[in-house]
Length: 189
Image: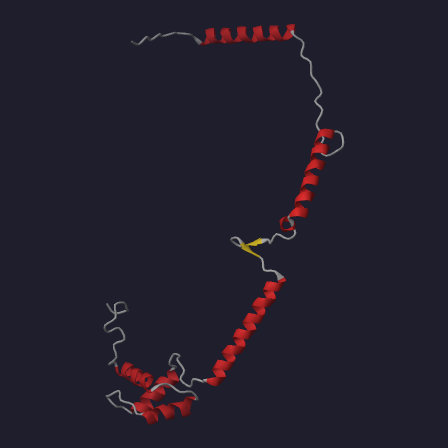
């Protein structure tokens, strides 16, 4: 069941209603005098509010007792966090790590001294490619290189490349090497 009521009020009537409400409110205010009180602010730890000062002193005593029982809870001894929760290293830990690094470097240097590797794995320079074409291959159509060429290469450039490396580069220069053969990923699909 719905009940609908249509009320037609003009602007003048609404104005009269609002005026009457304002006049009534003014009359009510005129009857009752309003008193304003001064509000005192509570001063924290300033000496005027004794309850707060006593509370604070009690908390300080409790804090001192806790630090005596558990010295690790002192603020100065708690390691400061660095990054995502990683604590800062203590000076002792820094020294230990430094010593470990130095020991690792020394062992690496000794390992290199014991077993030097002559073969270098690095990119071919344009000079090395040109030398391979002009000296080692001399216009050959096959990519077969002898062991003597490895010695000549070492004499020319000051370091050794393996025989397989020279052969593969020769095949590459002749256009007979397919780097991506039988590979799942590569430039050629």
